[in-house]
Length: 442
Image 1 (cartoon, rainbow, N blue to C red):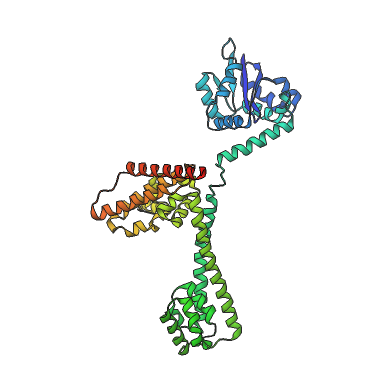
Image 2 (cartoon, one colour; image 1 turned 90 degrees about the vertical axis):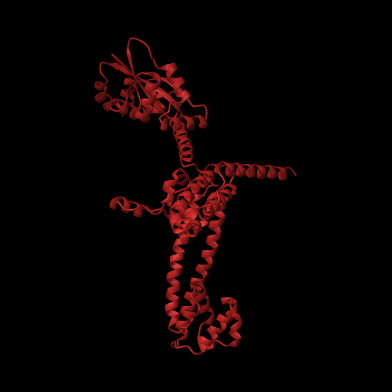
């Protein structure tokens, strides 16, 4: 005869159910399938052997985290040692719904573990009738416990923290890139449109947003006079350019334009100028957000490149998990797989190419400095992700190390060791904290 016990994990606690003795467990399956929906029939086959309620919501969360990771928690171990018949003439089998925790229990207790088949059907029935099988537990209380634990478990899994709003950084950098494309497209449209009337202006002013502001200011070129010179200087910040615009307007080859066309050009130019102004505000917002979420990464590689790395990785936590070799080629995945497919040279850098360090390095040292910079970016992102108090001290020190490495490639001057630099950074952070505490006390 086989003595089968089924372990069931609920938000309210652990429950151990005894199933009626049979010759073979497989014989139970058709009977259980028939009785699952009927509480009366199910009760005749399954009875509650023991129940261990969780003492608090925190205890429930700890136990569920352990179960999900396939680890036997101390509470579960004590519960099974107390209530499971581990010795005796009859062969005891423990049924569990998860094979991962089943393997951990088998290693811990050296007992026969059953998963799937009849155990899965019994677990389904227990889940359906749990509040009826456990005395003193109502359906409403069971639902509340499940809801509370579900929220706590999800919050712990996604590491919910309002201060680490890396999602805002991801959206901001995506919007910033989109604005760059849109402003460039719209500015080209203004150039082409207003160029019919004043074609010489394109040669004098090449910058897009400045051209739009001038198109908005000048309007009809025939109305430009010496009195307009001062307002032109305020926009272009150059008296020679302002004079050149005035001279060009007097001898322009452009066509005449009707007032209604001019109004539309001015309105469109105004929209482009406002978009350019919003882009500057958004960049400032991104800078402040990076200072809060990833100050060390921003100090090391810059706010925009750091934000692009976080966006490409999906989150700061994902970026912190990446090895330096992955960070180095992040953004160059197509080139990497093409190189692997054709057996060519793999790319030396991805998004970090936009950093000033790689641009300043000599051609033969670009690969070396990109590898070194990726290493430092990995360190900075891990410090940002897992440190309690945000500080940019480590990022500044890492930046100094990259500068020293660049100098080493050019002059041969030996840079400081990483251990010494990190010790200095820790001392500086500690001194800042002591100073802050002293100020609070005063």
